[in-house]
Image 1 (cartoon, helix red, strand yellow):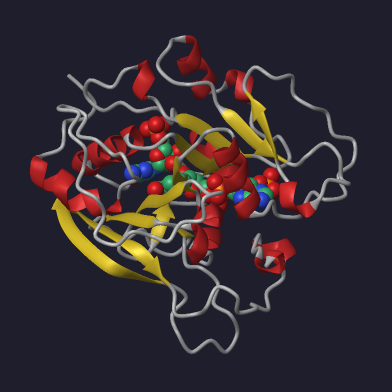
Image 2 (spheres, protein in one colour):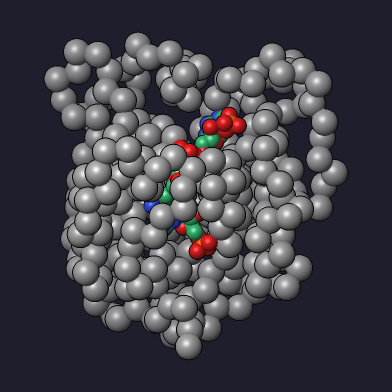
Length: 297
Ligand SMILES: NC(=O)C1=CN([C@@H]2O[C@H](COP(=O)(O)OP(=O)(O)OC[C@H]3O[C@@H](n4cnc5c(N)ncnc54)[C@H](OP(=O)(O)O)[C@@H]3O)[C@@H](O)[C@H]2O)C=CC1
Ligand SMILES: Nc1nc(O)c(N)c(N[C@@H]2O[C@H](COP(=O)(O)O)[C@@H](O)[C@H]2O)n1
């Protein structure tokens, strides 16, 4: 029996305003209706969907570095429908190491041509790519060869190209200089590099550090699709609550427009990020510790 099921028409209809341009019904090939609100998109950036599954107390894993099943089978099918609609799926290296995820599309009928490119943000090359499930699936023709996003070899590289993409067949570079090991790679650079490589849409699945960062970068995110599972993980779980600037009087982020749909026992919330704080507002956080990139502006 297949791991996932085709979505019902009502489920696809619910998701359609939040899908990348050109999204299709996998069964019929019919194009999804256009979004209600088109984002005024920077042409250098891909369409970005941020998506994850959380508990009612805002946790995405039972403990740091622990793979945890939160969503039910119906939302798993939704995740694979979403993977079908994107050119790439991106996770941080914390997730890659903890979960050894497949990051391929297992939607009914999906072929090798429908597979998204798995991408791991791995500044210090911690992920053992050769032994990974992603590499295995590539060998079996069940997924595309993963890419790693890391720092450029040269520390003299200009800030606007502060990342490098390594394909799974490339030899792994050996870094001798760790002077920048705690510096973030700017998200805009990561996304621009992906777009430059032909990625027009990317689904970002986590983990916690990545979600916390992106919830504070409205100008880079087009859609947010959150699965809420009816469970409480409790203290000690991995929270995705983004940091709030000191003395801020407004919420860090909201969704507007926003829509809701029940998938089995889970509730899915989909929306476009709406941020009361203007993106240019300086945030007084230590970027080295938070991976925040407001210094980029
Ligand atoms: N429920 C869900 O939907 C999901 C749950 N998860 C869970 O989340 C947990 C993992 O979260 P977490 O530990 O926060 O790890 P992440 O997957 O968020 O990876 C964080 C690491 O990725 C690197 N990184 C990410 N962004 C940048 C950047 N902009 N610049 C430079 N480096 C960057 C850093 O690596 P370095 O440390 O080398 O500097 C950083 O420490 C796991 O338990 C996993 O199961 C994950 C995805 C979805
Ligand atoms: N939708 C969803 N629900 C959960 O309960 C999860 N734990 C996750 N995690 C994400 O999915 C990745 C696993 O993907 P594969 O099934 O191995 O392809 C995992 O790494 C997280 O990104 N997602």
